[in-house]
Image (tube, rainbow, N blue to C red):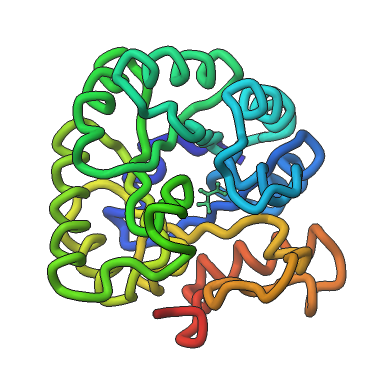
Length: 263
Ligand code: KIV
């Protein structure tokens, strides 16, 4: 399969085609996901919860992320490897540059950062130095204590307008991709339509350009009650490779997310 690059994602957007994204934290699962056709793999700081057993992503360090990035990079195949800047990597522009460099040296091909319009300077400086950036908006799990829990964001028009404006500012600053988490489907569509760059959604409705899930949720290895936007693809597939393939197909054919997965 041809390597997936930022240009591939942009071409998907222009053609109105969706693309699939899945978290992966090691070489074996990265390889299985890549063989299933998944376009983008994310070494997410969700590893703090699904691998390390924490109740939030806050304890994850740059060293943790770099270790898992090196592992996933060895199995990533044709897929594009996106990697999370962990909690407080956005504390200053200098820190974003240093942590972004560490992630790229470990094998990242696209760096994801959580925050709002105030990250514009950091994103501008990263992209100036050749580090492509995905800006994560909506529910940003690193701010879970500020947000008062893992709650849907942008439900009222003021909040929705702020998220849309933040996305525009960060694209203007150089973000090549936007990731929207847990926002109403109508806002997911409005932001996707308003931007020229690819928009990836998780709990952001069926109209974003890409869809992402955490691998453990796709495989039904979710602790406690799964969030509304999650689908367990293992239940029907019965094996890991089949579950990844079914997720990929469901995204490509826009049968996932279904209305029951949306807000
Ligand atoms: O860390 C992660 O896995 C993420 C996804 C939920 C998008 O950021």
